[in-house]
Image (tube, rainbow over all chains, first blue to last red; front, side, top):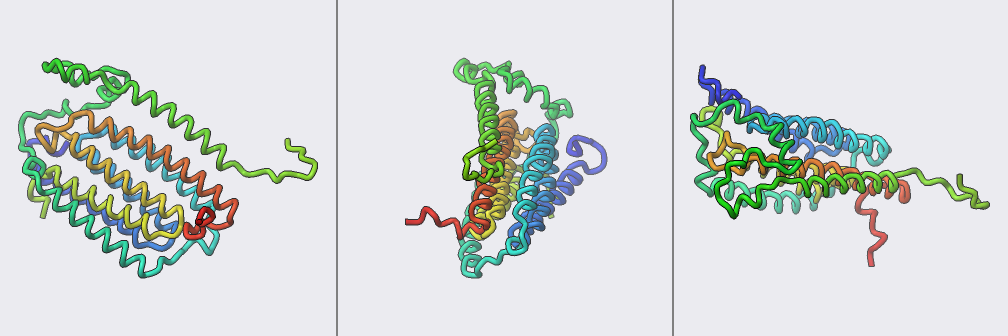
Length: 207
Length: 110
């Protein structure tokens, strides 16, 4: 991490890359919003989510950042782009929204944005950046800890002294199994629902 | 310029809020059902960014720790499942009605 390199102005590069990736993320998200062309929207979404993976890396979540790139950008968005390609008739490529809906949507969204921005700077603990010291590069190696937490052992919380809290440190095995089965059921259901229908013949002979 | 000060949780929250609001407006205004799906993806990504920010020990002393990252992994998996089902529904609608305009999906209207 640039933050930890004790040489030339380390926090400068951390802030620099944060601003860089944040501008890319927000800019391409606005591109998704204000573009009318569905193909361009899909492309901007790929770039926005890819840039937000950079923000994940900067926050020290390198495993989640890699998963963001592999699952989101590499899997989910490819699925979305296939959907765009399968439905890309010329009259659906560019669909104009009535300006009245734009005004209403931007007004409501602007109010929501103002609310969220004011909340983001309310808490003192959130807006004070963490100073240097007390952290090492070893702290950011979280991949094996995440793997162990999914199999039911929280190796990062083994020294939990509080008896009441120690019971809750048993990891995420049950949610992991639930989400696995959920993903399987969902994918089977999606494959069943999206299959091409075979036209029923008069004889009813279906292969 | 933020580059001169250190990055805090609030800066991540600002980026997450912008992504969230962009996704909400996207869901509200797009007429193409795949555009609505892209809005959902933006909203989920904004929420994910907040989880990461609160879980990062680089940004805050008493952070959520590993729980933030684990939650964001669950969000990523659920987003993949949601995208698969929503896309299947959109394709099914397109096959049956030959359109993907969400305004045309009024069969259940009373």
